[in-house]
Length: 413
Ligand code: NIG
Ligand code: FE
Image 1 (tube, helix red, strand yellow):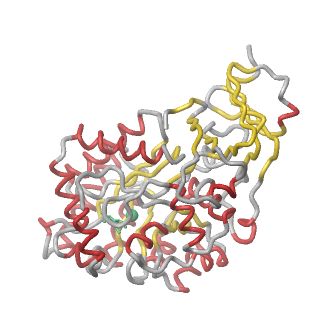
Image 2: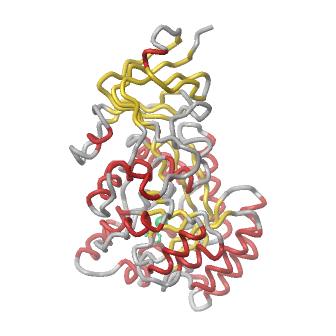
Image 3: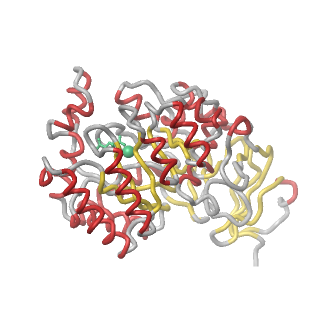
């Protein structure tokens, strides 16, 4: 029997991103790199990481020479709104003419426009669309992503979205973490009585989702015009009691105290945070809440970026993600998100790489399985046609992806 099923080496630049638990503070500036390294895979897991010289004589069923190339963990996109349907290109024009994101939403466009398209779609159509978007992520090196409901906004349609996510997860070409975001917007049936919808979420949707084990996380869009702080607290607490881990769309447009609420309820992550207060940032750091920053959303909504440096200095684990959705951030391009994290939010390339690998895996509580290249972890990795990770930033708006492996298996990207 061969020593390895797959042996990648020699590797010009091997970025392992490995340590136990998330990377925080000043240590984010250093990235563990092995020059002239190798990765060995047995079955679905990594069984060797180290110098090429130690394994070059080993036997392997399959060998790949990656000299002059970079090998990194597959990217983890810890915040997307896949699966969705429909087209909101008209909103782009409205926004470019000066309408705000929330104005469009309040006028029945925005999230409700996608809700109508999702409600009208058959389960098969929704799954096909979800798959297509997942594939776009894969073609940019994303091997694990978070997927959410939140465009159904009724028991039946939220379950339809979560079933589509379950089907995508079962296909094995990427790993998928499921979140129930039934508290994304108040649907038209409850216009004028939003608390009635909160009752439905806490009384029926979340219990149904938990019973069917369709989600690991419960999320809320806590924002003026979506859900209030009190409603968000109630929803996240109800979800938690059902075993759904809390996460929160916090302080995206205004500071409504979402960051502090994340700390109070022990959220695994608070996301967006463009308008988070200093107090909120301190509380998140003290409670160990991951700050998931979404620079493509700030870019696309033409808003000031989240204060990445303040979150890093406060000691929060920082992740970055795409927020891939048809309204506020229509991209699946992980490298574009990394570029914006660096050029827009002032992160260093090393910090950005940690934020989209190990720290994003931590934000999904999957860091023991994915997010770094280490013995015993899933063999989810990408080979890039660049001599070092820095060259993923130096030429920009390019996609030098060479190959993607998930569980040791090469997947078509
Ligand atoms: O994360 N802010 C709320 N939800 C999404 C946008 C969803 C949409 O516009 O369809 C976000 O930005
Ligand atoms: Fe989002």
